[in-house]
Length: 147
Image (cartoon, rainbow, N blue to C red):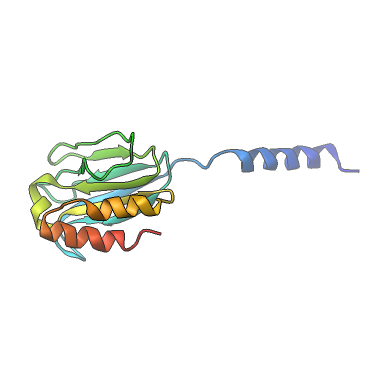
C-alpha cells in the first residue's frame, strides 16, 4: 500500500503534466549587420507555440517590426511596432507570421515566425505572397526551415 505522501506526490505530478506549458519569451534582434548580411532580424526564423511572446529589440537604430498583412494566420492580430522601439507580438494562432522592417523591407529585412505545426496549405499560401525580390529570397530561405 502506498503511503499518503507518495500518493500526494503522484497526484501532483499527474496534475502538473496535464497543465499547459508556460508561454516563452523569445527575443529577436533588429540589426544593421548580422550573419546573413545587412539589415537583418536575428534570428530570422523562430519556432514558437501559441501564447509565446516574441520581443523584437532594436539592437541598432532606424528599425521597426510589423506583421506582413498577407502572411498571417486567419484571425491573428496584426502588429506594428514604432521606429526604434521594442515591438511585441503575442502569437495566439497556429501558422506562419511574416514580419518586416518597413524602412528596410526592399533590402530584404524580413523574418518568419512558425507557430505550432503549419499545414501544407499554410506553407503554399506563404510562398505565394508577393514580396520585394531580396525580401522574397530571404523569406524563401526561412520557409525552407518550416517543419
